[in-house]
Image (cartoon, rainbow, N blue to C red):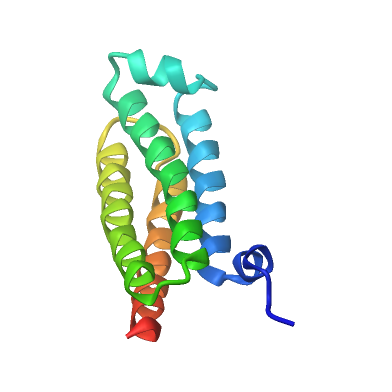
Amino acid sequence: MPESPENRLKQSRIYQKSIDIFRLTRRIAAYVTNEKDINSMHISKLKSDRYADNLVMDSLGLVPKVAEAEIQQNPVLKLKYAMSLQYIIDRLYINCVKLEDSKIQGKDFVRLLRKELKSLRKMHRLYLNSML
């Protein structure tokens, strides 16, 4: 019996890592912005709030992109979707650096996120190589 797409998705390491990164970015954003919601971060004039908002929104977009790549049956489209993940990972990393450079408390948490993003980059590279 073939494995269902949902089971394959749940077992995917890159999918689990993307969910972990979303959870981590949301916690960091809550800590850095003093528990502001997404809308408040978005309209805020503080740079740290805007960077935190960008982190959360980009990480939120990462999870469905990974799912889209994982459940795709067509190998050409699967590779295309998987390659598009690099853009989101790079944006997350850039916003992480910008947030760390702004005057915030909790820079250690942001450094932890950067470490996790580096791990995701490596995992993504291996993921792409397995498709080629």
